Length: 272
Length: 273
Image (tube, rainbow over all chains, first blue to last red; front, side):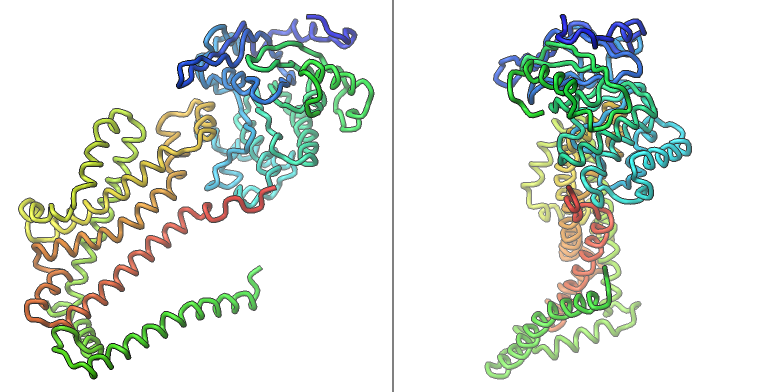
């Protein structure tokens, strides 16, 4: 695989570190009721180095979510292997946090109790976690909202609370499945900035799924471009911009070149 | 934003909701009294509202230790109803949870539930007399039996309709079956459970009264049959009024609990972007 912009390829540096997660020729076939098997993803091989921010871009239904669920250990691959921290993934991993497209907050719990759900399930120290919730709420500008219920929050605020929940048990790997896909453009930009800030503060490894090319290029160290079903990784691009990035870079020519290249790979004028 | 004008407006709205039922009740009572005056008929067919009121006051005014007291009998009816409701509800929820969690339990149990459901359950009453006797036990058993089914079916529906993403969230945390039930399925099913409990409380009272008709020594159902044998129709009407009020209060209690425990259902979707 060669890239059009080879001077930006710094993947080699990441590869020398031991990968946090590795997939080898992962394939997932779904059986359907009519007996026809659907090939969701095929032959997926990539790695995530510790501390990296990697995005997967692809159009709807290309198997991005399937890939995320495979990594999360929610179901096994039909073929191939997923290795996390040197161990094959056989079931759900406690060292991962997930953010879904919708906030999936429990409406009967306050923001604080929602954020502490992983702590209760994993039976971790609650007092320490409560302090972390306070810090994280401050980081995303939700201080003072501990005791409000999800229905009292806007969509963007709900998704911020969901991000806090995904970080509360201090996972090594954060899986995000189009987390800002349901938000309006302005909230989305704001949350991109906030996510970058969280990432720079906590240095988690982030596996970020999106269908927004701009979002992927803006946030990522590397972007994996996925083809339509069956999903395959057709290209891997390293994004070298300095951090912290602000939204002004999205108007720069270099930025535009990455966006353009990815759009070409995805087959034309999809949304940016 | 509950300023005084808002509170006053709400009070006016509540009052105006009460006005029409009160007017219609007054019209009905006057019409009833007139009907009896214009077309005289024996009081054992249709007693005058006045005599119903007198029977009501007499029944409620008796010493609660006396067998002529409505309170004496109502206490027993209430005790059986509430006990049966609690037992039937807990059993219904527990069975629903077992069926939702363990396929084998559902496979084995559900056909019996459906079969039992199509049986007119009050027909079991004579059997309960044989098994549990003429004391409170048989009444509790009947009211629990009638409560069980609506609670079971609604709860089961609730437990199996947990949102997929909530379950995936729990799965991603490697949560146990019990943790998933306790944190996701049970609280999420509460609106369904309460739909069952709302029906259940009505059936619980029904079950108790039916049992008191069939075989009991105390209870509102017992005095209804006693008053019937002496053709004291005014007394029967008075008891029906007491039972209607009792049912109303029981339903109100369950509704209040429902609002308290499912406060989030009425608010969902509010203030979304």
